[in-house]
Image 1: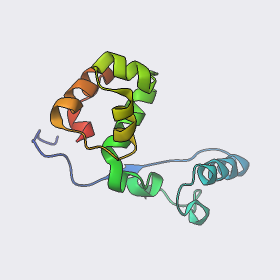
Image 2: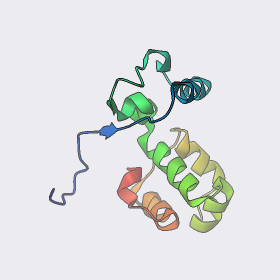
Image 3: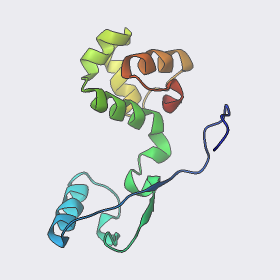
Image 4: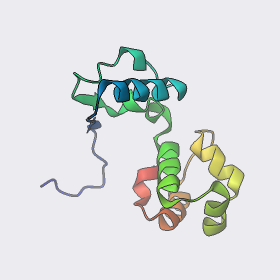
Length: 124
C-alpha cells in the first residue's frame, strides 16, 4: 500500500476499457471527434488496453485544476452560479479557473473542495 506523502503521484496512467459492439465504439469515436479530442481517429479502441490520461483529455497537460473543478462540479450536479453561491467566489472567476485563465490558490482550492466534497489538492 502506498504511503501518504505531501507530493501528488507523478505517474499519471489511467486504464480505460471499452466494451461493446463495434458500432458503439464508432459512436464513441464520433462523440470524441465532436468534442475535439485530439487524434481520436488514430485510436485503436478495440486493441489498445492502456491510455495515458493526457491521451483521453489533452487539456490536463495545461489545465488540470480547471478540469478537476469542472468534473467535480458535474459530479455534484452544480452550475457555476450555484458553486459561486456556496463558496463566495465570483461566478466569472470560477469560469476563468475552469478555462485555465485564472490560477487556483490554496485558499480558493479549499473553499472549492469543501463545496464539492473533494480533496483540495485535486485543484492545485
